[in-house]
Length: 452
Ligand SMILES: [Ca+2]
Image 1 (cartoon, rainbow, N blue to C red):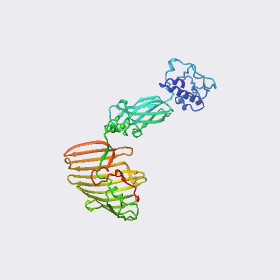
Image 2: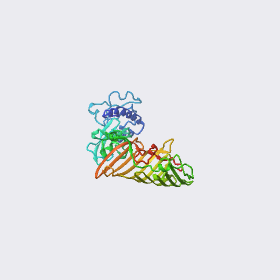
Image 3: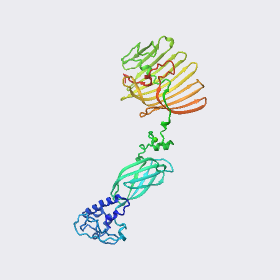
Image 4: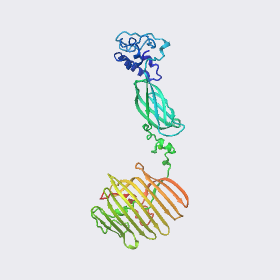
């Protein structure tokens, strides 16, 4: 039997073209070792091979034991170079469909695939290679396998898809050109980390289908789209260094004693003692002293950062007592603010808070402030107004997000409630207390620091 006949052994359409290619290869093989194209024949006695005989483009085996040598009676040789006598044997229907056991044009490929870990009763692993396709069998744990008889020395796009819900949702995919070898059998392995899972995000919410299913969320629903969006998230006192740094001029050393531009309140004065390196202290106060609006801070400049350690007190009907440490550091154009604060606002009622800030941002052109593009702020806030309650806010923003994500947990006299929503702005400029000047700059953190 020749290669052309073998075309009809392939259950797939492209096998015809493939076999033509192999048939041509077989022709040129008349001057090369036969096993390059017909390894099965290489074991035959040489006088049964075509090496010594001119070939019209097909293998023209003589009848020999164990080898089917039929040729198709027409067509196969008409387009081939006719360089010599042909020795085709008439074909018979009885043998035309019988594979030649001595001819190896197939490779048994054992696919051994390890998928990302995920448990479900509706998982499938589907493989295609060119137009050949099959499903794989679950072996155990994350291992799947299948054996496939594929044409030798042939390249096709191999695609493996890991699906759940019996194929309704994709978890991972693997795509790679794969060329079969010329041996009788080979193994092809794929490991879990070779699967692309991140791109498969049905609802486009940034969480992959696989991650969502593992987390127990619905990969078809962008949960964020269901969250409430508020315009302003009220905050207690954060970005506290704004109220200190903005009182300093860029002169170094700076020994300012008065600055009419700095006033949250008319009459605010500052006594700064900042050396040439930016280290020093600041005392700001507002006249008349009876208002008791005082800021005290120590400032230190390190290699790439400026630190504050300060306090702020203010009295009207209530009394503010705020302490904080902060550090603004520079990394290229990015500025990072790390701040820890604790404060209270006490009078008829008591309000107390602890805050931790770790955010990064970039300078807003034309200002001294950085707009936060990512980071986390936590605030624990306790008040006895309307009963005793403690609310813990965790406020996060990813650099790709337009909104802040707010998670709140409230303990109101032993009753816990929690929620999640989105906020367009953090409203440090909203007046929670009477001492804060309502300036939108304080939604951002002071970062255009001459010492950085
Ligand atoms: Ca998703």
